[in-house]
Length: 244
Image 1 (spheres, rainbow, N blue to C red):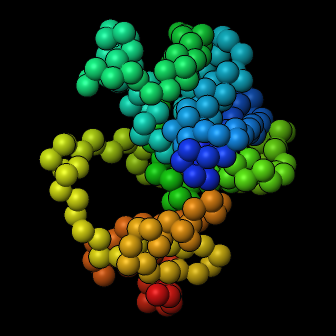
Image 2 (tube, rainbow, N blue to C red; image 1 turned 45 degrees about the horizontal axis):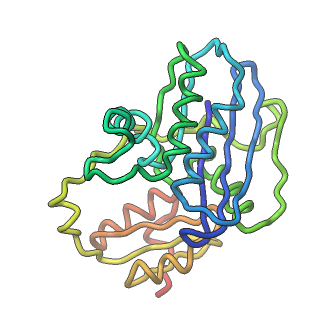
């Protein structure tokens, strides 16, 4: 199992990546690093490729690769074939962004063949231990903070790393028409430091959660939706104070 994530304070700006590898023999190894001027997408990609690069070939088991980046998953499993055929041009005829990292990620995938890599989507900031830890590592490196990286027996690892959501399916891509017609938000909820806030705009919500490790946030569609989101965060909607 490999979990990976990336973070950026500003986009572009200082960034970081984090990876947690769980080996079949019962070892856990955390990796992380930073870049003073980068983007969130690049850090997401680096987290994934560094995780694969840390494995020695041949790998005697299938690999479960967990990330909250639909960009990484769709890029390496779907889009990359068309990019190559078009000479690294996208469907609009423009140069593919981050080509250097796509080529490196592709090399790592090829190096590990015939090992099967399953690319799994985990929604960020929903309490999945592996994803939350990678986010914590990424943010620390993005902000230049010292963080201790674990490397040792699974039995001594402090997180329930095998706890996963019921669904790991990649969400469907929105059509061009759907992207144009954005459904208005009822509110934006943020949860950090034990306090829930209701925000009127995404900008207000983003200011509170940006760069905050383990912070949760969500756009809501209705008052009922707010309650369901709070339940998903492990909170009682009837007892939880929501600050404005």
